[in-house]
Amino acid sequence: MNSVIELPFNQHVGLQIADDPAKVLQLPAGAQYLNHLGTVHASAQLALAEASSGEFLLRAIGDLTGIVPVVRRLESKFRKPAHGQLTSTVSLPDGIESVKNELSTKGRAIVSVVVELHDESGAHTLSASVEWFITRVAEK
Image (cartoon, rainbow, N blue to C red):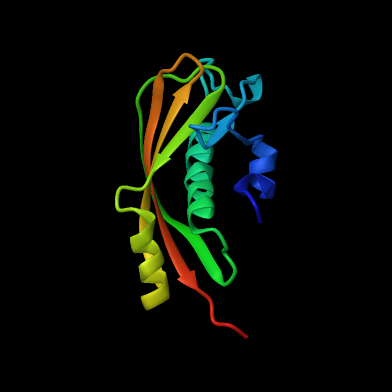
């Protein structure tokens, strides 16, 4: 897999690689993403946040052969109502090297990825922390 946007759910939702190279993924504007208030639905924002954290890890770790990552926890705070296209930025406070070291020495790691979403006006709409459990699978 080259990108999390290849996953059937993420294709169904319509997630895309961000046009801006400083961003990770984007959710296009569309009526199908709106809630009863006319703003981007919370579930659509959470889908973008989770997928963005996975895309970041995929890019940072590279080859996932023999590695199984699963989301363990997702905590989020909705900051402002979201309108139109959303984009994500991602950071890893502890750095990727510690994750790679744990994978090589222990065969598993827990990593928290910080995701920020902004809408097309630049409003900061969501902050999230996505905790991943990553383990190596035994070779057959």
